[in-house]
Length: 371
Ligand SMILES: NC(=O)c1ccc[n+]([C@@H]2O[C@H](COP(=O)([O-])OP(=O)(O)OC[C@H]3O[C@@H](n4cnc5c(N)ncnc54)[C@H](OP(=O)(O)O)[C@@H]3O)[C@@H](O)[C@H]2O)c1
Image (cartoon, rainbow, N blue to C red; front, side, top):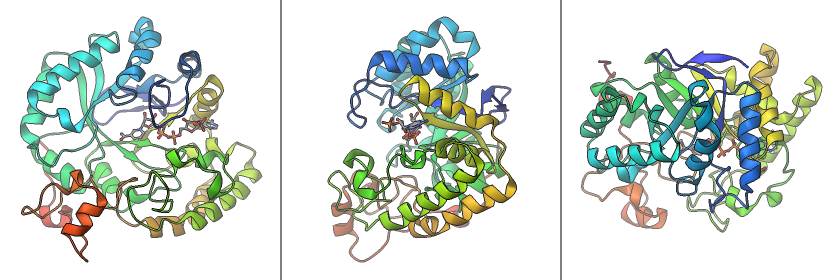
């Protein structure tokens, strides 16, 4: 296992972080999950040298936090725990309450990295940041991170203070952050933590056609907006995705590792990436995913993998939001309208006939300063 420094802290995290969403036994998004398998997955990750564990209250309404607390509580000093705070809970009072709840579930008295799960367009950022600083001063958290913060929200935050990480969707099939926010994180010494790095299983090669992908995983903008659980209303690019997966399969066959391992290793060769947050539902998956940390890919292989996924990158465009056609990761510059992030895509389109909402980006905000 390799370890890397988290942002500007002195916290060393494993290059592979175990993602805690799918280990919840109560999450609608993932099909049935046995608690015993989740416990085995967590032990297997530990045995493979993983010291970094990601979870959130939203994963099975606290179930994921509780499972990690049960396994990692007795080994607390060996691990770096990160959990999140939901976008509806960003008032100072709720931040303090939610932190206490997470501490209790995780069976600990401090959280190493406390992340804002999603931005909230309706709440001012400054009191939120001050409340997080207060938790840090009280020793309840060691570092502050964000997640799903695009250029506009991150710029606002950097005017107030520093954050150590930004957890974003990043995989061979979802390379949106390379356009803007990835370079911005590098410039500001903010570690990128990559979520859905296996594109929820697509990059393990387990699905050979789009029809095989279960509806719950076909909600993303890679898939047709006609999928039953989809809400983005876009055509998607299913054909291009599976052409890319076939090309990746051919490259991987030449180097003798599993597709999943190579897909995770590719991320670790990208600028700014500190750790890859890979979900695992059992011990075998956790062990296999951890192997990626030690896989040094040839520069030529990295380049070829990037080349075969370029077309998907172009089609997906600059909207980093995996699930919504109008990004919830950027502040929408339309103050006369209600918060678009809270509207359904149909409602948003009705309010914005024929226009794409304008995003407030780095160019209009100016270069963020660090304090
Ligand atoms: N900040 C955010 O907003 C956000 C959003 C999403 C996720 N996350 C974090 O990122 C983590 C990972 O993302 P994710 O769970 O969406 O997707 P992911 O890591 O891309 O995919 C995880 C899924 O792929 C399958 N898998 C994993 N390892 C495998 C292997 N070695 N071989 C075969 N199949 C394997 C498993 O599902 P099956 O066995 O059922 O196929 C597993 O649940 C989450 O657990 C969570 O901690 C954060």
